[in-house]
Each structure stands twice: as structure tokens, then as C-alpha cells.
Length: 358
Image 1 (cartoon, one colour):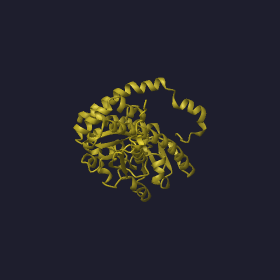
Image 2 (cartoon, helix red, strand yellow; image 1 turned 30 degrees about the vertical axis):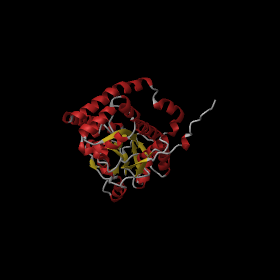
Image 3 (cartoon, rainbow, N blue to C red; image 1 turned 90 degrees about the vertical axis):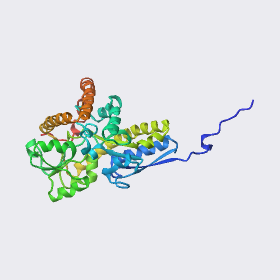
Image 4 (cartoon, rainbow, N blue to C red; image 1 turned 45 degrees about the vertical axis):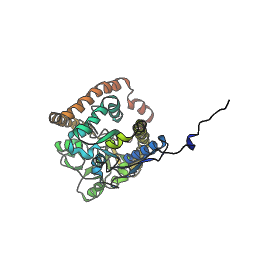
């Protein structure tokens, strides 16, 4: 008998790798971009080098606010950006990206996409509503976000009224209706504006990203949580024509790698943010729990705004109806069944809590 051994994979003729060019809307150091980078590295490993993806930071090929269109037109093969960057095109970008989410947290929001019908709505949103030639995957990150930085203490909604406060998106719309003098400027302009007194308060993301920006150098009172972004929902996009040319196994790898990269980086980001919070405290920053009155008024006003958007935009209503139906199952279950986070947490670490509540 002659035994014939298959030729080892490593000895077989290597395929010429497919290289895709990609760009995100964020700087290279941001968690958002780091997820993008890890995703590409994971895809390359899982495909044994058959598929390589360039992950360039904001501005490398197109301006950050043009990434969605550039991916649709195949100027980019791959793009990554938050729906907040195209907020003006359709109000449904709001519930599709950052809530409020009817009591759900970032994990529940992501579950809504993969378990609650969100992926089907995402596909419809791209193709039929936004008319973009892309296939997308949700990348929730940077959650939850703080209310932000202030030069003085905020003890009530009255302390916010008339105050010049940098915020964008639904936060700006809602706080503006609550009497706050909202200002929308890019992240890179926040610190200089605070220094010059153009604004008196500002939100960005959280301890880690805010420390990178230098907000602790211009304000010492940091308030959390915010209710405007319980999650920041990014989008990984593949040009539709490029997607169709990929084999089914490559398509599945792209999807699975996005879940892996998002989960892995967000785990690390929580730890990095926790350390950054401690670092800020050592630098003299006072961290406060946002007054419940502010959070309650925000939700009350936001519910009015949601009703108005839903009345004008049928797809918006379709999205929030889907999210509410999912939240109605998940949130009461977790409130009823899951142990309160603060119960065992305070049992062990009560003296380590660094937020003061007025």
C-alpha cells in the first residue's frame, strides 16, 4: 500500500491577496479607530492573508464627514463612522446610533441589532432611505458618555439654563429646548473655546478620550452620566459592489471579525477609562454624579422630541417601535432578574466610589 499525503497548506501556491482601502472618521489614537484597526488585523489573520484592509485615520483620503458618501461611491472600499456625522440627512440616524434607548444599555442596543430586528432595518435604511450603496455592521463604542465638563458646579437644571454648553446631535436639540445655550463645534476646538470663554461647559466622550483632548486643563468639574448618548453607535461599511465580489466565507469573516474586534477593544477601553478617571482625580478634577433632576428633565423633553420626529418620519417610527418592543422584553427582565449592580458592588467597593452626589 502506498500512502499519499496531501501537500501542506503552507507549500501550496499562495493566492494574491485582495487589498481594500479603508478610512475612519476618527484620529488614529481613538478607541473607535482602534476597533477599525483590530477588525482589519483579525480579518487578515482569519483569511490567512487572503484579504488585507488598509485602515487609515480621519482625513487621510477624504474629510471625516465624507466617509459615508466616499464608501458608497467606492472612493473608499471600506469606511467606518458614526451616524451622527450625517445626522442632517434623516432623523432616523438618531435611534439607529445613540438613543435614548428606553432603558437599554450599550449591550442591549447591540443585541437589538443582531437579535431584535435591527440588522434588517439597517439594511433598509442604507438602501431605501439614505440611498447609499453600502453593506453595514453596527460598532457600538465609547459608552456611556458623560454630561461633561464645567467651570462651576451644576446642582440643578437652573444652573444649566443660559450656560454656553458644547454638545451636538440630540443632546444639543434637547438641552436647547430646556433653555441651555448650546454650541456645536468640533472636538479639536473645544479646549481653545473653553480657554477663551466662548463656552462654559462641554461634553466629549469619557475620562479616557477627554483626557487625551486636555479638557481637565480648562475645567475641574466633570459630571456623569449624560442621558444624551447611553451608547455611541458607529458603523462599519463595505461598498456594495465590493461586497458582492467577496466570497461567502470572506463576507462571514468580515462580520464575525467586527463582533470580535468591537467586544475586545471595548473590554480594554473600559479598563483604560477606569484608569483615566483615577488619573484625572489625581490631577485635581472633581467628579460629580449628574443631578437626577437634570436627567429626568432631559428624558421628559426628549420624549416630546421623539414624538415629533416619529410623526414626520415613518421610518423613524418603525425604528423606535422596534426598539421599544425589544426593550419591553429585555429591560423589565433585567430589572427583575439581574442582581442590582450597586448591591454587591457597594458591598465590596463602596469606599472606592469617586462620584459625589448632591
